[in-house]
Length: 166
Image 1 (cartoon, rainbow, N blue to C red):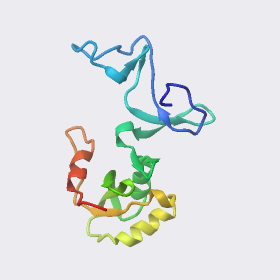
Image 2 (image 1 turned 90 degrees about the horizontal axis):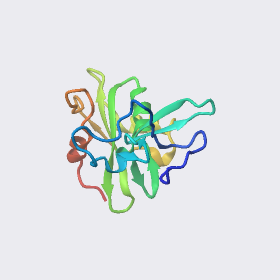
Image 3 (image 1 turned 45 degrees about the horizontal axis):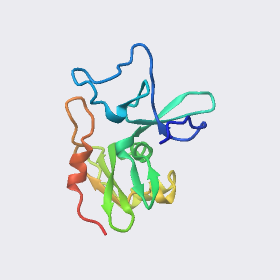
């Protein structure tokens, strides 16, 4: 948790690890680790949860959490639902600044070749698998998601494409 205490199974928290092969700082930048290195532990910025058998499930990156009306929402969960839709080949979810809720949910999707996305139908599909507060406020269709040289989605580029919301 935020106080560095272990969490019970099923609760999402910060992943940390340590061991003889784990660095205790950044190469050629001693002391620059800040929150990444604490008390012998390395905090990579990932979130996860353990199941009852002790298996770790990655839930996303801490910096990607969307806080909507005080509730933490993990984009990876919504992205997993979106890519299971037969008309979607790729998806990314980001926080969308909102005066009322703090952040709303914006989903960027890449459709299967030749398919026109019906946003309402896609949102209805999401409602079959997600709690109402996790349903995106907007669906934005792109030909491809912006990615860096190693294939990671450049979420900051997506946020920059968002129009103002209420």
